[in-house]
Every structure is written in C-alpha cells, then in structure tokens.
Image (cartoon, rainbow, N blue to C red; front, top):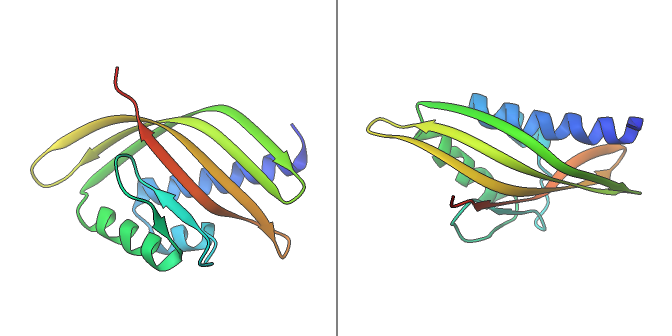
Length: 129
C-alpha cells in the first residue's frame, strides 16, 4: 500500500467513524463543501451540494439512537487527485421504535484539493439477499 492510498483510506475511515458516532462536525470535515458534491443514500434520490448532504446527515443522526457500521473494502484506486473505494456496508441502525439491519454496496469518491483528500461522492445501493 502506498502512502497516498493510506491517506485516502484514512479519510474513508473518518467518514464511517463520523457516520457511526453521528458526529455532524466530523462529517463536515470529511466532505467537500462544494456544490458539486453528490450523495445517494440507499434507496433515496441524489443530493447535490454540501447543504443538501449536510441536512440529510442531520436528519439521519437526529432520528437514530444507535448506529453500528462494518465495512469490507472491495477495491481502492488512486489516480493523481482522484480516488475511489468500492465496499460493502453493514449497518445496524436503531431508532425509537425499530431496529434495522441493512447491507449496501457503496462507492466513495475522493478528490485531493489544497493538499487534502475530501469525499465528493457517496453512493450506497441496498443489497437484497
């Protein structure tokens, strides 16, 4: 593994740590604040730009009592200032009245800007087994 791959994997890990801890501040440090950022939660419409993405995470975090996330990386690719990670997500989510176990396959795309890697695209698709 190269140093650059390790940097991208660290940002990816920070994304899932922020997700699991329901930490909006940490999430905002991982995501690009640009209008071109894109997020597609499993089974949902595309959200474009940091404001829509941030609002979606805020709603998820507010309506979730507990989150547990396991990831299994399938592939990592780094090219110049762009990188992507394809992975499985296993999410245990508890709200006030139900607990959901869900599996998704996800793609996370990162861009290096001003010497730092940022998440610019997250797309999760539900797996039905």
